[in-house]
Image (tube, rainbow, N blue to C red; front, side):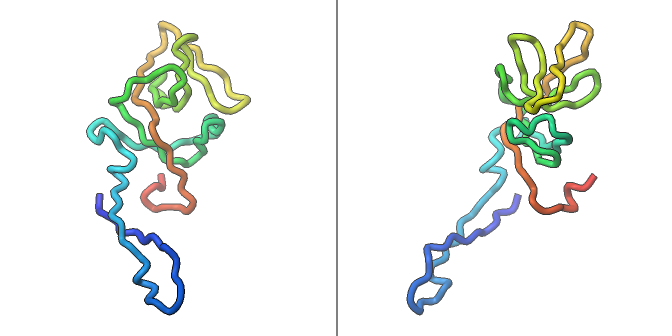
Length: 134
């Protein structure tokens, strides 16, 4: 990823050059958001079932396959051929939504289930991006 220069203002007083108070800081979103690059993928959230943990429809999910999934982690899983983003309940062997009105998904021995990774970050886009269009 390219280094993007950003400006941080310390405030302008008097008649000094406004540029004198700006400092360019290098920023790599990869370094900031991704801990295990070779084990990380990005997905897009669909639906409203995870709003209780701050994941909204259209948010970008950063999913790490290297991280061990623990009880009540937000995970992306493949359940019977469908990708889902849910809270993992290891004690009751089920997947939980984080919004009212969505059923608990109890896992049975006949289910095809695999954890694809743990959601370590989510990003909300406030303006449409052609890169994220389906």
